[in-house]
Amino acid sequence: MNGKRIMQVFKCLTVSVAITLVFSPSVTASNAEETIEHEAGFYYTIQRGDTLWDLSDKFFDSPWYWPELWQENEQIPNPHWIYPGERIRLFQKQGKDTFTFNIPEPEPIVQETAVEVAQEPAPEEKTVYYSYPPMDAVGFIRKEPVYPLGFIFKVKNDNVLIHEGNTVYIRYADKDARPIMQGGKYTIYRKLNPTSDRNRNRELGGQYYIVGIVEVAQVEADFVIAKVVKSFRALDIDDFILPYERRPTKIPIVKSVPGLNGTIIVSEEHAQLIGDMSLAFIDKGKTDNVQEGQIYTIYYQEKEKVKTQGKESVILTPVDFGRLIVLHTEQKTATVLVTQTEKSAYPGALVHAPPEE
Picture: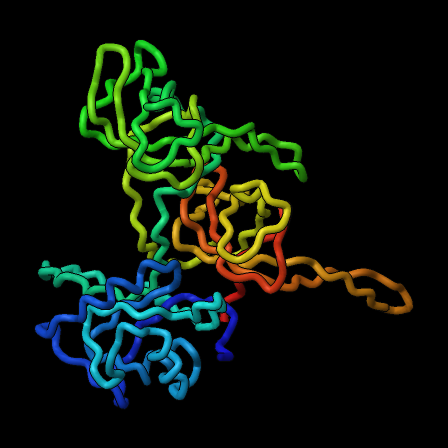
């Protein structure tokens, strides 16, 4: 499927005549559509008047790709019957996000001067979002210290490997730590060595590596007993805990920062090669107006020799070879997911905002 590879901002989808009928909101969508979001990917929520023909035209630049769009969404039994509220997947399971994004620019606000006019509620914006089910496992790099509530000091039966279902014993980090509540959930994390930007010789902060979630079953005077309810990675003695905060798994796609340039600091697993569906960190964050749902392009600079008036010079041309989406932001850094690459990226790879059309 050959769609445009340049990310744009999202404009409202138009209603047009097509082969697929969409019924009124009173008709409920099939429950089968919930199962599709177990996979990470880009999704769109069907609106009243949408058709597979129209959506194919908008996202893939041709209405004739509607059979492939239908094939990608096995939860739709009949392509002629889709319903508002159903969610459809917008890129192939092989990982090629080949569709075009169009995000609407905000319309100018008309000021009413003489008479106060009651404001009608704004219509629901039609957005594309990225679904990433394991959001609770997404770590971060933070300059400011994170103070733990406690740490694991023992596992029941002295198991060598701590995993989901095990009972662990947690001791308070210090006497002034906030109380750990019975029945509460807590994130288990491990702090890795401070992360530095080798290109600019600056320390960016500690990496906080999320390994699991525990639920407290019993609180004693100087320790608590908890059960591991989620293990994203192998847990260990001396892993720390923080209050658990559920993160949304659906991330609306928003406009990237024009002209932004940054670099990939390191992958979450500290791998030398960074491929599709790898988590990594970039050296731009909230202070650079980076936010969740923005999409950036990974590129390298190709050198080209040119002659001008008999003098030879070298120009650098950016060549895009991958994309990433921002999942979490800190003040100076952001956690990103590489959604697609034509070749492996690496620590120090360049990142910039995709050009606008």
